[in-house]
Length: 324
Image (cartoon, helix red, strand yellow):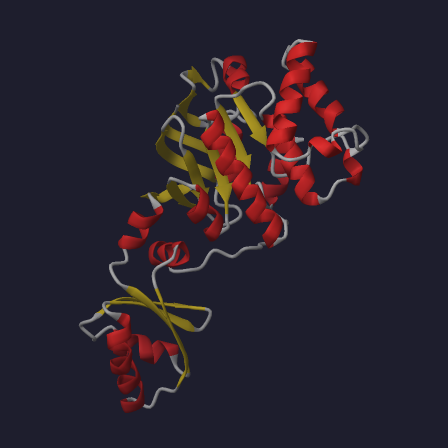
């Protein structure tokens, strides 16, 4: 459904997307996972024809994103990261306006509006002004609007950003339902680990404009090859050097003053860690043992965590202005 070869985008010398190659299959939910500023939104903006690439090429539904922009736009739906509804219109009026822009007949708009409002459970508020909606209801309406013209591909750019956990979980269910009922290809950008884990069949971890890992969630976690132990200690540097000598330890990272240790048979080998610390006069304040997560995978590849909120840099501000 989507083919990307060497796709690159630069802004005044700053490389936002760096020579990525990617193939996305029909009918899958595909995740672009990474921190703010990693290049996720820029990638989506190029695939949806909002931005032209600096170099490289991509096809969406078989259409070139530069040479066949109109054909690409007819086959995609998009839910932007920033709100884009007209809040002085009702939900039904927003959908009607969108349908008209895509050349749908009045009967098509009426039937499809009813269908998508039922899908996102907003049929009872169809004639309420959007400004009376909660944040979660607005996101659901934006998804409904993106489905109005029967797109083959739906882009969701940080669809649950700023929503409370319960509303986020409800939106995940809607996205799963849309994928299954419409057999639609969905490309999702997110910096939420649990969101990517729950929704996406395959995940590309993107950082500093590059795809650093790509596979299913389970296979990405298997790369670590063991359990993950997080240690809060009095001397992280010293403890790191000591642990690297243990045969059962595969990798040790230091972040935020803590140790993130990939280890075989974590439950069995934790006593060895405690004994090693005591013998070398390092105080252990806390020990957490867990199965590998996508956060641990990101740490494995980058040596740092994904920060859930980062200051907006100049590129991000510029991208938002360009989108508007």
